[in-house]
Image (cartoon, rainbow, N blue to C red):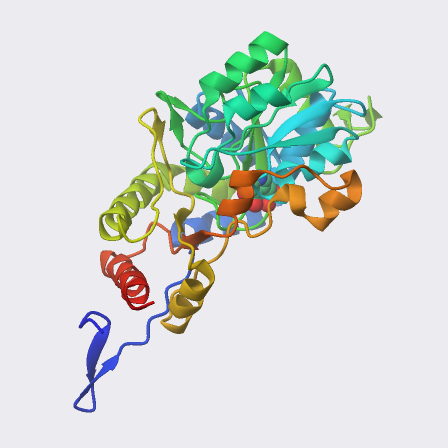
Length: 379
Ligand SMILES: Cc1ncc(COP(=O)(O)O)c(C=O)c1O
């Protein structure tokens, strides 16, 4: 055992009890204060704070409109509705993602067509997308998985040639950059989540649709609020997927810190990379990408035993994702058995997410990395 993680205890060297979580939500007095101010204001839903947060988030993403909704899943669902995707349509989706990248497609009556990912980046493989296009295809749904941007130019090219929409799932990629442009504003619509583990949160559920298209933005504003434009005039059947003032106030504060947090995540990733290169498969950052490391995901064939070993040494890990979407019971139940996706199925057996959050200390990164090396050297 290395000396790191050891400390003196009753004259003996004993291992210091480590407790390193997978992710951690930032909290400070400015956030607490802003929440109390909203509580005292007497205004709670879709008021000034929501408008302010939407304007600031749109500016951050480099788009004209941001419409906040109750979750990332609601953002995806409403985007599909706003683009009139419905029964008879197909949407091309990478299977290596969270279920919410695909379930809303089925919920609007359309069919997700699952494609494999690139083994290097875990992003949808443009060649596989090209092969999956049929006359029923209405949209491509790239996921900027783990904070690394998908290969958008290739995807936009397929979309243009086949007259398809591109809906970006940017739920894990706040501030990620593709060739100098932030993700979310690259396709027709971008969807974000503010769930607590994300690069920025509203300390609860929350989401946002960003778009340069005024008509789509207006449609989503209506659909999130019972389909109305005026207080008691309902133009179409909508939903209650609204956003509230407390969430917006927290979001404003979190957004201010997001650039420095993303920088901190990148530095932590560099430290992990240096320590783990040649030990496990480390994440790739394409030359055209600015990865924001929502998750730091390694790969090893000994994934399950390594995860157990790290747990015994006070390090939390998680598998994103052990069962690809096309093999989930809810999906095969709804659509029937799906074709094999070789790379997706292989990496689902090997991926492991290590602790990653801006305040993770260099000594903690070293400790986690040393434990990984120690485990793999001895098995
Ligand atoms: C890739 C991806 N898509 C969609 C979602 C759904 O977001 P939410 O949990 O806010 O509904 C998430 C969040 O967990 C996600 O990681």
